[in-house]
Amino acid sequence: MSQPDIRSSDHIAGGEALKARYGRDMFNDFDIDDPQFNENFFDILDEMVAKCPVVRSNVGAGYWMVTRQQDVRRVGQDWRTFSSSKGYMPNRPEGLPYLMPEESDPPKHTQWRTTLNPYMSPKAVATYEEQIRADANTLIDRFIDNSECEFVSEFGSKLPGWAFFKNVLGVPIDDLDMLVTGVENGTFAPPEERAGHFEKVFDYLGKYLAERKDQPPRGDLVDVIAAGVEYEDGNLAPWEDRVSILVDLTFGGIATTTYVMAGAIHHLATHQSDREALVDNPELIAGAVEEFVRVFPPVVALGRTCTKDVEVAGTQMKEGDFVLLGYGSASRDPRVVDDPTTINITRDTVLHSAFGVGQHRCIGSNLARLELRATFEEWLRRIPDFGIKPGTAPVYETGILRTMKDLHLVF
Amino acid sequence: MKVEIDDQLCSGHGRCSILAPEVYRLDDNGYNADRGQIIDVPAGYEAAAALGMRNCPEAAINAVD
Image (cartoon, rainbow over all chains, first blue to last red; front, side, top):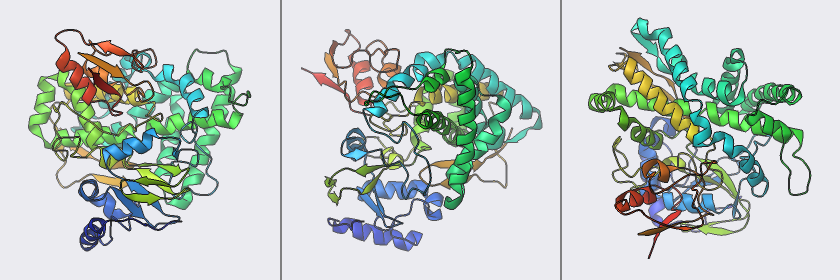
């Protein structure tokens, strides 16, 4: 574990000001799981990106968090210096299997991405649009006559899973709830419980992959995962790596898009002119989607491990140090986004890091955009006027991922 | 106007093509089909090309003299 060697006095002074406000020095004694971060998410990110290019946490083995877009880009693109092979999670619990290909570097990572990319391209996911729209309407049908709903449990936590499981994986729909719960708990349960939840998901998907391997090929993503790719040593990827690919894709598809949907619907529920603009001009929805992704980043930060001593934005890091890429803060960097704290659904430059940067760019980004666009088009068509149920307020959970747990609407 | 798309940096976000499809094409994997090359921007699409360029999260697109 290393101590900060080069820390400007700005960081220290700014951090102490935050200590008075939040109960801890968010610049020099950060904890991404701190409830104060959850409660004051935008404010703290904005302070960081303005004043603290490299945040320090002393939790567990300790970690850094890089906050500015330019530095996040540099670190994310430099996979040789900042490796994914020791995992994306700070203070990784013992016994948690590595997710592939997320937690690997080139050339292994490249082998897998080259094989998987065609199935998640804009062209490939476009073939799912009709089914996604139909599913959005099926979910809306269930509550539209109630004049109210809880958006997350009745729509937002279901649609991304349905879209992924039905179209991409072909898994039986009856098993969806169990998988969604397993991934959510694997992310947000108390840290010591997470590995157990992940294990259940791993087990299910391992069995599914084995079944599919013995069935005639359907020409889909699962076939190529089951078949495996050849690694540099000339051997086929071991079976556990193939299962891990399936889990990684599942995890990416479920725990994330929900937050963008819920954040966007909450914004539209509380901003009549934006809601009406999209109802009247559905062609604006695609641009609004990108702004919602920027402002409601489900992936707050993911990590890398330094393969050598390196300086980042004035902070000296040591080989072995864990560094978080602050995707949430980088997406609010005033150096690259004009007036970043404002949600502007028609802004023309929407630079964000919500889908990551570098080779590990979210493979599901095209599917996510499609799900979001189809969701808002169908929702606004069927429920053009809606608000927050009086006496309720959304509830969030934050760590390296963020989500909204609860959003009560009336219409 | 000419732009160059860096083939090491392009990671398939697709923003260039979403915003300026007349200038930026994607391949079947969703990556810029002209990455590693310099392309001519069709006359009248300079603003579109600039919009796509500045929305690339990787800063993979640059104007070339």
